[in-house]
Image (tube, rainbow, N blue to C red; front, side, top):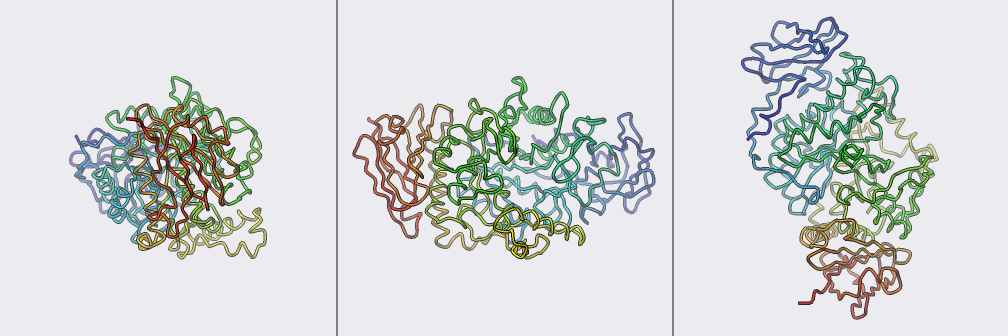
Length: 627
């Protein structure tokens, strides 16, 4: 059955019978008229809940319209499904039921199977469109990905943006294509057994083109604010309708576009002091709406709150997973020495990295110097797959002044070692586009605001880094790429041609091989809290043991920096290996993965493995099972 047929919107404009039904919330307005281009204005009827609506005959898909509120405006629809002329232009009636889906049997991808590939539609391909993204999907399935995560696509000012300045939350950005182009992308992904997640922003709206306040003053909170502007009203007067607006937005993406989940941006900035947190209500509504397939809600939240991932029956919010950035921060501190900003809270020592790996995140209530307060709770009873780990994501690259990726700052040998650690660990891995071949291109912060706002954004971007030692000199801050310049956007586009060239292709082969092992090794498919152990071995070594109830154990020995000997006998990790016999499956220095291999010396003849690394690397061992 077409999943969209079970969905009935309550806000926006949707074809119904021989006309189109319009509905908008404007609780303090006396009158609301819908102005359809080429037709007479139509006064809408006000309901007791403050909404205005009516069925307008003769209006159909493709017609453009706006609303006039108490003779002011006209304004675009807050729940517009498409803005063909931009965020300040008219809205377009879209018939979501016209699309011919081919995914009736699709049931989604389970959390245990998720391997996420984050991408920005505008920079992922040369064309920067939904259609072009669909053309590249076979490359992701060939790599071993099971899900792609689109950075926000709700329409925004100008022709280029990260997406976090969105103001039309129901309308796919017209610079990427039409709504059916996004549907076609999702349908194509499902045919390839790829789930599609979408990043959505429910903590603020962008500074240009936000018309919500023209309809109701209750959308924004009088008590809460965010770093990006006014907070949304999830717990004040008339907040029930505001909560309903954002829940409807989530359900619209899931039903009208068949999306497999949402990544919820900066949930720590969603302020709600009410009896039931907005995120708990959102989780329950989404789960109840699509019981027939796997749909995941994944939060981005720096607070390390285990309760977010627990069901409401246990006092939680019922979310499926959360970005757990402590792993990234420990690895980057270890490999690059970054120690400013939030990296002040991390030593990057192998002992602290191993502790982070065992726990899922590092801060479980300790005092944070950066946040100047205790941070985190105990994640000990959370399944590891509920934690999303990464070496790169859009924030950890693009929020750097020069947009450099991790592999731009370290040698490829260390990068390969860190890659093995990520992909062989129990939590859900996330890759950022181009990471799999160590792309040469950077990912910078870019916008396309009108001139005065753009000038302030450029100034603010450069001032943001004045407290960092590398940019304490005002002249050096002037070298930070201008977010408003088109060249900044163009520099962020992937160069897919290099993915087939060395040494890039070798790195991609490593990712492909490790993801194959993740899919096929029983020990890597098992992710219970008792099925793995992570132990520090020396100043830069990590031992990761993975076990399965049925099938051989696997052992990953990693030397992140420099050369060194990793002798399991000399560490507490010896007891973890229980005296098994091992065979080598691969090393990150094997010929297919390294253009200039320096093979580690591996001694498996003793009671526990001993590996001498001639430079950073990882060795993947499998237990020899007696027949």
